[in-house]
Amino acid sequence: MSEDLDLTFAALGDPVRRALVARLARGDATVGELAEPFDLTPQAISHHVGVLRRCGLVEQRREGTRRPCRLRVEQLALLGTWIDDQRRVWNGRLDALEQHLADPRADR
Image 1 (cartoon, rainbow, N blue to C red):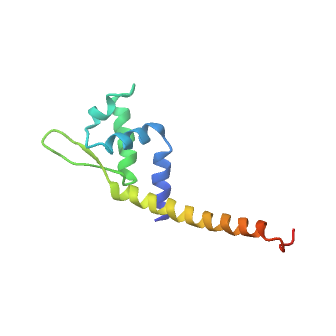
Image 2 (spheres, rainbow, N blue to C red):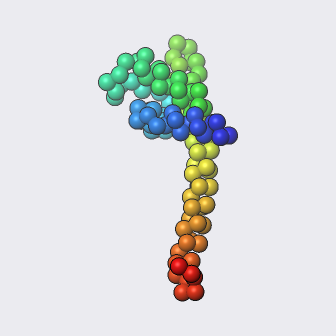
Image 3 (tube, helix red, strand yellow):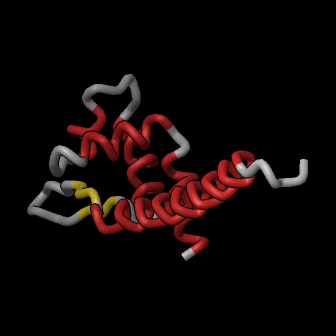
């Protein structure tokens, strides 16, 4: 799981890939359709899609001559779970610190 998270966060570290994920969240699209709003070649977009495929965020399928890309929402859910876990840990730590600082008996 740790390696999957590393690959996914590394993939999302690029603004183009984040924009592709945001676009695919609205629905499936081919590489050509994904390339339209960018000043990038379809080959460059294919590279970014490949990175997203390798980390499991995107899958492509064949529909005749078309190869639409689809966002794998379940992979995003794994990221959300990890982020929620971290938030719970840090909220607990910050709550404990707040209680410690508010305790008049605490040695400082």
